[in-house]
Length: 155
Image (cartoon, rainbow, N blue to C red; front, side, top):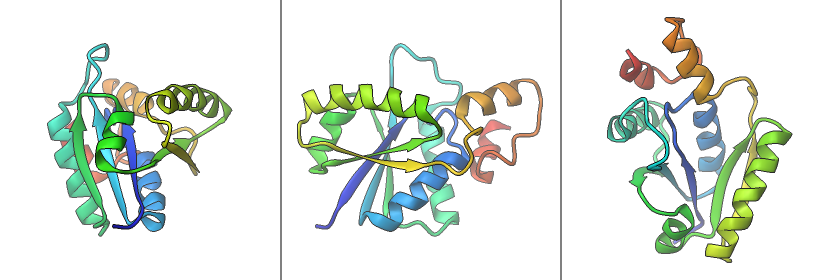
Protein backbone atom coordinates (compact mmCIF):
# COMPACT_ATOMS: atom_id res chain seq x y z
CA UNK A 1 0.00 0.00 0.00
CA UNK A 2 2.90 2.42 0.59
CA UNK A 3 3.26 5.32 2.96
CA UNK A 4 0.30 7.67 3.19
CA UNK A 5 -0.11 10.96 5.01
CA UNK A 6 -2.80 13.52 5.63
CA UNK A 7 -2.39 17.26 5.29
CA UNK A 8 -5.36 18.84 7.08
CA UNK A 9 -6.30 22.48 7.12
CA UNK A 10 -9.07 24.99 6.76
CA UNK A 11 -7.53 26.15 3.45
CA UNK A 12 -9.68 29.29 3.27
CA UNK A 13 -8.13 29.97 0.82
CA UNK A 14 -5.49 27.45 -0.30
CA UNK A 15 -2.28 29.46 -0.81
CA UNK A 16 1.02 28.97 -2.60
CA UNK A 17 2.43 28.21 0.85
CA UNK A 18 0.01 25.29 1.16
CA UNK A 19 0.93 24.16 -2.35
CA UNK A 20 4.61 24.23 -1.41
CA UNK A 21 3.94 21.88 1.53
CA UNK A 22 1.86 19.58 -0.71
CA UNK A 23 4.72 19.41 -3.23
CA UNK A 24 7.21 18.46 -0.52
CA UNK A 25 4.91 15.86 1.00
CA UNK A 26 4.02 14.35 -2.38
CA UNK A 27 7.71 13.72 -3.06
CA UNK A 28 8.13 11.74 0.17
CA UNK A 29 4.80 9.94 0.58
CA UNK A 30 3.13 7.59 -1.87
CA UNK A 31 -0.25 9.18 -1.20
CA UNK A 32 -1.29 12.41 0.49
CA UNK A 33 -4.81 13.24 1.59
CA UNK A 34 -5.46 16.98 1.58
CA UNK A 35 -8.21 17.22 4.17
CA UNK A 36 -10.34 20.36 4.19
CA UNK A 37 -11.63 20.58 7.72
CA UNK A 38 -15.09 21.84 8.52
CA UNK A 39 -15.22 23.66 11.85
CA UNK A 40 -18.63 24.82 13.06
CA UNK A 41 -16.93 27.59 15.09
CA UNK A 42 -15.26 29.10 12.01
CA UNK A 43 -17.00 30.90 9.19
CA UNK A 44 -15.60 30.11 5.75
CA UNK A 45 -15.04 32.93 3.27
CA UNK A 46 -15.06 30.47 0.37
CA UNK A 47 -17.24 27.32 0.19
CA UNK A 48 -15.32 24.13 1.03
CA UNK A 49 -16.60 22.27 -2.03
CA UNK A 50 -15.51 25.07 -4.38
CA UNK A 51 -12.11 25.26 -2.66
CA UNK A 52 -11.75 21.48 -3.04
CA UNK A 53 -12.42 21.83 -6.78
CA UNK A 54 -9.85 24.62 -7.05
CA UNK A 55 -7.25 22.56 -5.19
CA UNK A 56 -7.91 19.56 -7.47
CA UNK A 57 -7.45 21.76 -10.54
CA UNK A 58 -4.23 23.13 -9.05
CA UNK A 59 -2.88 19.62 -8.42
CA UNK A 60 -3.70 18.63 -11.99
CA UNK A 61 -2.03 21.77 -13.37
CA UNK A 62 1.06 21.08 -11.22
CA UNK A 63 1.16 17.40 -12.30
CA UNK A 64 0.81 16.20 -8.72
CA UNK A 65 -1.05 12.93 -9.09
CA UNK A 66 -0.62 11.21 -5.73
CA UNK A 67 -2.81 13.59 -3.72
CA UNK A 68 -6.52 13.45 -3.07
CA UNK A 69 -8.69 16.26 -1.72
CA UNK A 70 -11.52 15.50 0.70
CA UNK A 71 -13.81 17.51 2.95
CA UNK A 72 -14.04 16.16 6.50
CA UNK A 73 -16.41 17.23 9.27
CA UNK A 74 -14.87 15.17 12.04
CA UNK A 75 -11.62 14.94 13.93
CA UNK A 76 -8.57 14.65 11.66
CA UNK A 77 -7.03 12.07 13.99
CA UNK A 78 -10.09 9.89 13.30
CA UNK A 79 -9.77 10.47 9.55
CA UNK A 80 -6.16 9.29 9.76
CA UNK A 81 -7.21 6.15 11.62
CA UNK A 82 -9.98 5.40 9.10
CA UNK A 83 -7.55 5.79 6.18
CA UNK A 84 -4.90 3.67 7.88
CA UNK A 85 -2.29 6.39 7.88
CA UNK A 86 -0.04 7.29 10.77
CA UNK A 87 1.42 10.51 9.35
CA UNK A 88 0.11 14.05 9.70
CA UNK A 89 1.74 16.75 7.57
CA UNK A 90 2.03 20.30 8.88
CA UNK A 91 3.77 23.37 7.54
CA UNK A 92 5.75 25.68 9.79
CA UNK A 93 6.54 29.33 9.15
CA UNK A 94 8.00 30.19 12.55
CA UNK A 95 8.31 29.12 16.18
CA UNK A 96 4.77 30.30 16.95
CA UNK A 97 3.45 27.82 14.37
CA UNK A 98 5.58 25.09 15.95
CA UNK A 99 4.25 25.75 19.46
CA UNK A 100 0.66 25.87 18.18
CA UNK A 101 1.10 22.63 16.21
CA UNK A 102 2.73 20.82 19.11
CA UNK A 103 -0.30 21.54 21.31
CA UNK A 104 -2.64 20.17 18.67
CA UNK A 105 -0.35 17.17 18.12
CA UNK A 106 -0.57 16.29 21.81
CA UNK A 107 -4.37 16.25 21.66
CA UNK A 108 -4.40 14.23 18.44
CA UNK A 109 -2.02 11.68 19.99
CA UNK A 110 -4.59 11.17 22.77
CA UNK A 111 -7.22 10.40 20.12
CA UNK A 112 -4.93 8.39 17.85
CA UNK A 113 -1.67 7.28 19.57
CA UNK A 114 -0.30 5.92 16.26
CA UNK A 115 -0.28 9.38 14.67
CA UNK A 116 3.13 10.90 13.93
CA UNK A 117 3.67 14.50 12.84
CA UNK A 118 5.94 15.45 9.97
CA UNK A 119 6.80 19.14 9.76
CA UNK A 120 7.90 20.97 6.64
CA UNK A 121 9.42 24.43 6.77
CA UNK A 122 7.82 27.05 4.59
CA UNK A 123 10.04 29.03 2.25
CA UNK A 124 7.79 32.08 2.47
CA UNK A 125 6.91 32.86 6.06
CA UNK A 126 4.71 35.86 5.24
CA UNK A 127 2.07 34.03 3.19
CA UNK A 128 -1.04 32.93 5.09
CA UNK A 129 -4.71 32.50 4.29
CA UNK A 130 -5.49 35.35 6.69
CA UNK A 131 -3.09 37.67 4.88
CA UNK A 132 -4.54 36.74 1.48
CA UNK A 133 -8.11 37.32 2.66
CA UNK A 134 -7.23 40.68 4.17
CA UNK A 135 -5.37 41.92 1.09
CA UNK A 136 -8.13 40.61 -1.18
CA UNK A 137 -10.74 42.33 0.99
CA UNK A 138 -8.97 45.64 0.38
CA UNK A 139 -8.95 45.05 -3.36
CA UNK A 140 -5.23 44.26 -3.56
CA UNK A 141 -3.75 41.89 -6.13
CA UNK A 142 -3.16 38.50 -4.47
CA UNK A 143 -2.14 36.60 -7.61
CA UNK A 144 1.41 36.12 -6.28
CA UNK A 145 0.10 34.32 -3.19
CA UNK A 146 -2.42 31.78 -4.50
CA UNK A 147 -2.48 29.29 -7.38
CA UNK A 148 -4.28 30.64 -10.46
CA UNK A 149 -7.09 28.10 -10.01
CA UNK A 150 -7.75 29.49 -6.54
CA UNK A 151 -7.46 33.07 -7.78
CA UNK A 152 -10.32 32.33 -10.18
CA UNK A 153 -12.47 31.31 -7.19
CA UNK A 154 -11.54 34.48 -5.28
CA UNK A 155 -12.59 36.64 -8.20
